[in-house]
Image (cartoon, rainbow, N blue to C red; front, side, top):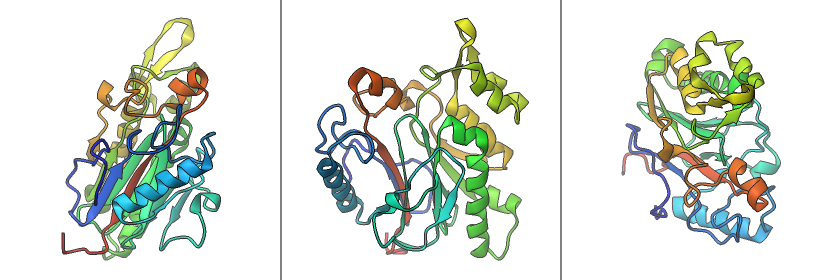
Length: 276
């Protein structure tokens, strides 16, 4: 692979035949405010620039990501091969899972939390798009259930506790607790199913709160028995809003600049497994 040096390669104990990357703003042709490596289509960028950026991503990773039509829901789809036509026009879901070598699971984000999954043997991979709505509605629980279902087919029918112990999760950059101001309805949406989530919200004047999206995700992962969690630790370096030169941010840029691009988190099983 010839990845741009600014892109993030997850640091986690995934097997070497499992490949993963998160793109940043660097390496593309899009003009401001989408400069320069915007991978999102319905955001106002020139279609030709998005297509050029996507071709560059394909060339860099040696495969074609399957992009979803993301709707901030809890839908998850299994990918067994590349779609016949452009995937983000067809597949409405916020998570995808695959055990097929060479099939790239991908999600786009610009403040929402991208989450990548694999197992300690690298038999299955998955990608999840988790904004606060999807997170509160159960996208992590749905993603893990689907991931575990596919993994069980390759693991002699092992049950969820065993599979959870074998699961690796990587949290990518998202809007951080320094910047994610929300109303009381957001806090209540999480407390309704997890009363202990209150510590993930810091009170502000006028009834507002600062929400820690990565911490909320980590709570939900641990409640499923997934303890091997890597990546975003809620510090400023992972905050999309606080790092304008590196990350796109919908909240920061859409009003101030008229638009924001999208980054992509990708994960796949290398077709040349065993030769890395």
